Image (cartoon, rainbow over all chains, first blue to last red; front, side, top):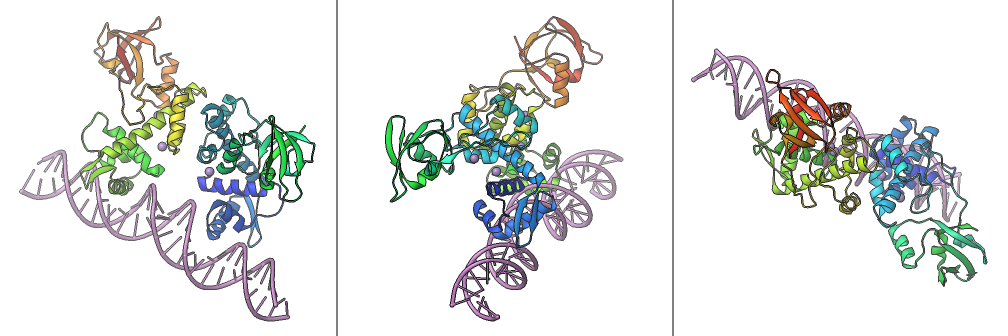
Amino acid sequence: MTLSEEDYLKTIYHLSRNNQELIATNAIAGRMDTKASSVTDMLKKLAEKGLITYKKYQGAGLTEKGQVMAAKIVRRHRLWEVFLVEKLQFSWDEVHDIAEELEHIKSEKLIEKLDDFLNHPRFDPHGDPIPDKNGVIKSMVKVPIASASEGERGLVVGVKNSSSEFLQYLDKMQIALGMEISIIRREPFDNSVEISCQDRTFTISALTANNIYLKII
Amino acid sequence: MTLSEEDYLKTIYHLSRNNQELIATNAIAGRMDTKASSVTDMLKKLAEKGLITYKKYQGAGLTEKGQVMAAKIVRRHRLWEVFLVEKLQFSWDEVHDIAEELEHIKSEKLIEKLDDFLNHPRFDPHGDPIPDKNGVIKSMVKVPIASASEGERGLVVGVKNSSSEFLQYLDKMQIALGMEISIIRREPFDNSVEISCQDRTFTISALTANNIYLKII
DNA sequence: ATTTATTTTTAGACAAAACTAAACATTTGT
DNA sequence: ACAAATGTTTAGTTTTGTCTAAAAATAAAT
Ligand SMILES: [Mn+2]
Ligand SMILES: [Mn+2]
Ligand SMILES: [Mn+2]
Ligand SMILES: [Mn+2]
């Protein structure tokens, strides 16, 4: 597996989560910042290797084998992110790009030793689950603040958007994983949500509310 | 800088240590397990970028700029090796190949944070010095056992050959960095050396004696 | 049901890094 | 000094991954 093949496989994996349908060429191109023609070439190669199913003009989907491979790459990515935050003191908005490179280092032993060293974390710094060595994910029941009802409260367990901009915005608002949030009121006019968090009460936009996941308690 | 350019630069750096002369195309090809013609192509490219001096049929040498770049790569390599041994519990004969990949991860901040995390180590697991962030090396006065005189003693501070085979052989003989060794007798017939180490007295071959460095005390 | 628009694929080109085989330069041996 | 041996470069391919432009297929609109 080359670095490029791994990145394509991972992209297809992410586009397939919460979505049984075939993935379109353009969807992949859009997310990877390449041209559709490049994607087509790569899809043929991955299909040739038995990692995806691919039918002309129809789109692509992971095979069982591709699913397992992709989950391994995601596992590596997320373990490295934990390392960067927990051990090297990076902030959660800085780690993605570095992990994007580290995930391609090829050594089973390395990743198992890293996992030991980190004490087998189950979630990455953005709350996303870390697949086990067989590619199995234990995901958590979580709901965006935007879908929680007035009066409910929950723990912040993840973010939907993990761009630097959004994560830094959360830092600025002093919202972090593990904090408890109560839904005070939802404003029907613009779908903004009034919440309380750590003795502060304030309002977040619908967009923000859509990108923060809670585990209701 | 591509991965490949970095590997070539590092090879030239290593071949230039203890040697002012220009490095021959074949020397590089031999060490990197490529063909001379591939080396020639790369030398042109590196010269083009101002990282080496290169004159047809004469050989190559690092420029100031190339020197600094190469030292940075070596710094990354050796810091990762320390990480793998100290934190992930790899043995010293397993880390080189993994570090060969890790050294290419591009992030200044990563490497400075790693250096902090490791407490600014000055030597890698094989006793080789780690360049500082400016590429400056503080090397140590060290002498191969083969060149030490009878009656002298010293601490094991490095190995010349750091192949897995040799390192595993040292493990088997229970010789490790930091141990104290006394030169009991040198046998003129085959240049083997009788040494004592940790209350054991035994004989090592000339080849072995040439590949273990001592700091005389 | 055609026409139009969008998406996807093909064809052809390019850059990076490798190789083989042949040409050229340097060194060595006599 | 010259021929042979060795070392190095050039020329021409190959593989991987990308791109542009044109062709083909599918989807949307009138
Ligand atoms: Mn990430
Ligand atoms: Mn990646
Ligand atoms: Mn090494
Ligand atoms: Mn390398």
